[in-house]
Image 1 (tube, one colour):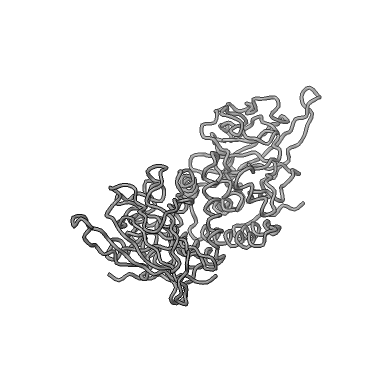
Image 2 (cartoon, one colour):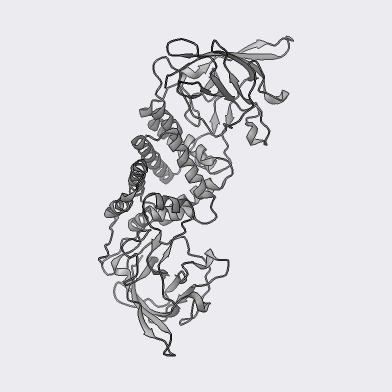
Length: 278
Length: 278
């Protein structure tokens, strides 16, 4: 038995040789690329043992948090938007996608059109959102499902405060592809920044803020699912979103109008979504 | 305010632009390289949203384990040995280094020369290890400290079974740089493989085994610390160590001899370590 010595240069080749037997071809491709790029990174920065250990501790800490800190890490390093861009190439005329983020919840309550997803008076400024869901040919997509969610004016999503569902819901577009619902006008807020991601942002001179936005996940039979936001025109941080999610076509006017009583302000917004065929 | 749209191609540049303000120059260098290589990897494999989420879940799970699963991940992907190779370039004549691994414990008991680090009869075959610590000039390094640790014949380190310290200890070489202690003959064993790393190894057609070895961390004033193993000549898995730690010069004979009673076998090994000056 000959025992070979793997020089720094030959080590990567040996690691790749060991995974030759990977049965799943896609996994083999992903692991080969990951090992190669990770080794390139290590060779490039030549970490000391102490730096390597700091990196290990950073990853461990990121995984120990109860919330989805690795999604946040991916979001704030632009990886999520890159995956989005590689997967969802909007055709001319179809609505652009953006990040899912860590705050979607499956099984949000199903509401009739016109319902209010805001359950507490203090959630923020009342808002009415109307729009349509259409195909690229301009024809309505009847019965498209719209899963919507947002943070309150305090900057928190429901799940950051407890288990109760609030400021989220699922609507079904009508036979003409139209939808309308009530919510609160989105406000800017910081992504959770009391953990490793927050430390990383501070250490690299970045703020944790996201511009005001309303989340949409729109699905319809025969169409590609669309995960996107509507951003509030004129909102803060539109030009420096901590997760790189802003696209100009997704910025819409949330007009302030007088409420029914003439006293409270109400915002209104309208958007016509255009889905791509599968 | 102009809101720019970041195409897939321009996204990496925008992320790097955002960290321009990083005050710590070293951190800026490391983050720039990490973001660049991570984006290259993502562009190369073009993960679907589902694959991306699988990756996020894999990282989260790796961090949730109580043991140091990220060290194990680094070890089994050859990253630890790469960091080792980049940091500790052995001169001709000096002893080679290898991985630290996840089982070192600070504050192991300090023993007089000749003591036995094995506290239980069932730990394995009794073994005597002798040797010297010298400099590259051949002169002894008096008072060099040797931190040694090993798994028992059952394949487990003490910390995998409870809090009690066993099969580890710290020795001080004498005025002539000589040391000797008792332990058990190392046996091959699997790295912990009931977690994400184990799944990764199975999925890529790899075994989790490490060849028999005894850990050393040798320090002495004026010399570079040496983290290394002695591997048992003829041991299994020397040519396929799951963490890529084997170097031919670290393989030594653990000779079996009859014990004092003429009944039990005892192993003996000898090694002369050569340290590099700082």
